[in-house]
Length: 511
Image (cartoon, rainbow, N blue to C red; front, side):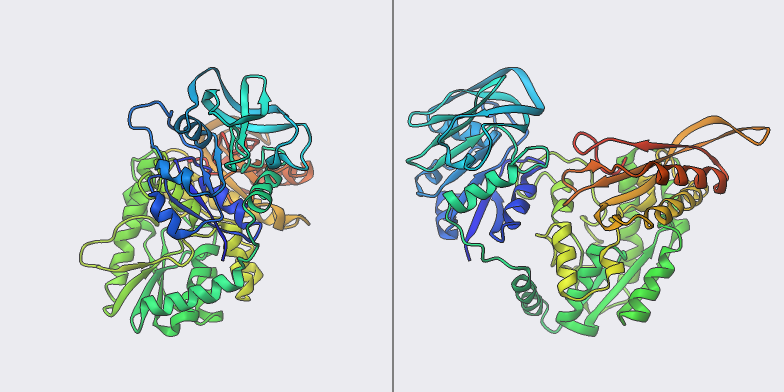
């Protein structure tokens, strides 16, 4: 199977590059930036991509590269930091830009570049850099320029080395998909031979080998990721899978009951429900900082989950529905020097007495790939079409301190948001829609009486993989109905606002 390897220099978009390549049915894999040339040779990639990153190439301790990689005879594409690093290593010069370029920029293409085959001479790209290449290495040519960047793209046709100062992997770059396709097929000559059906068969066999005759305990949230992970594990080991659902009191309205009916009654999985709402409310008392709340929820989740897991004395493995975005946003130490955006509750440690080995069958998949796997496994649409829900639940959709009363308010507001959005004919095209309770009260009038109540924000975004997102243009009629229903039916909220921020620069969740 052909593969393209991505050296991770810490960009929050690194995983997105891998996802884009996989869309072409070419297998892609992310490896540490400090991988040796010899190890890369053994992996036999058809091409190599150097990702972007938050560092400056001339900073002390900036991540580098084994120079031998440039002698492997394999095509290389440097993206942003990757282009600067390649230029510096091959004899060019990099310096701080006269002005930082961030956001959409128009680029002019110099004709004759194979990377830009079939693309207009002028198009808009997404820039995100402070430094720039000031002098290109010997043997390189200019492929594109922008108003503030004379070397927006460069190439060495003989060596098959290409550098671009922008990010083709994000949706904000026009023709970005075509650029990566040109690299994968025209330059690397890769074959489109990676299919999810083959991945499922390989993963089930791998799980059987890893688990053997032992048992697995899995934290089931009822969301797409843990549900697909559970079905995959159940296919591999059957009744030796034991699922635990923690009702943390921060769930959507009536969610615990829905999960029990779906997984226990309809799918026949072994399911234990731990009802621990008051334990979580106590842990959150007095906390308002988003990271402090996430960590408190994560720690309490582990404590409650551990108490239930101890009851399964013969379980050797812990199953998790961890996917790529969880990993990249949670840790700076996994593969590359990326910066932590927010911590995730399902990436952490259990008490020493629970010496589980991890089983994470979805760790290398993006959300849309997970849904595709679920469809191949013939899972119900009502499960697979569920919108993403954060592990900490409503705890990160209530800004400021979390209380039981605020949870009740938000559950009722969000219920009305979900009911109205479900009526839209394009519901399945919307990545996520939800309500957020703001720590802001304002004056209102209901009847002839003055009110002083909370503000609710409605958030709706379109995305493919949660790495980038654009706000949804919901119909005015839908927004009007949502606002009317929340204000009239949820006592305690008298104002509704709509969030029109995209990711980046905002995140999808407010906390």
